Image (cartoon, rainbow, N blue to C red; front, side, top):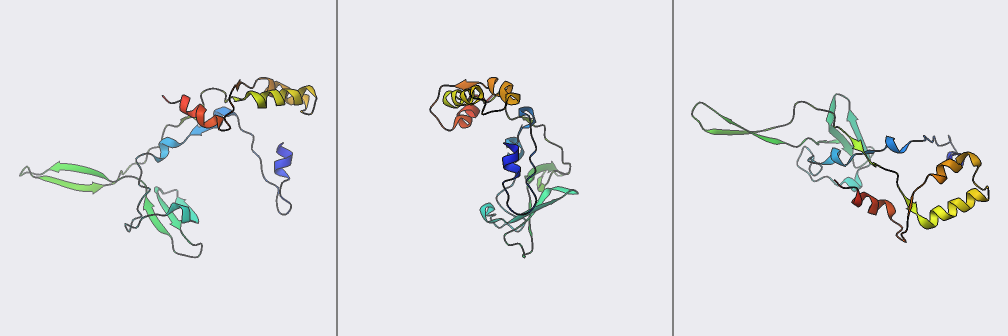
Length: 167
């Protein structure tokens, strides 16, 4: 399988395929919650489907530089939400100011899946048939034998599986 993907290109360098275990996939949905994805620093609405290039500087991890055209100047968006801070002065009047979070902390990511993802019963049956016919090398049989399956005609198994996994 990997050889087929690596050799899929006719010209240029082969694709690099990195094999990953299920416990290496992280749920990144928390990263985008409560962030500013709507307007750039000039107050213009960001059209993400038209963005052609995005870059981030290590020294400014909350600032995204983005371009709608490769040869255009980049616009900026600070994805950290502006928090309203309230303070009282000596006369007891309220002062408010917009302030961005000065410290950037790394988020605590959770695993994307807490148990094996099932395949459909039909796919499992077909894979077992391919193993018995030795169309799949014996080396991989242990992996395919360990797959769990569900009886579902639904082609979007992973979507339904994610809904069941909500806290």
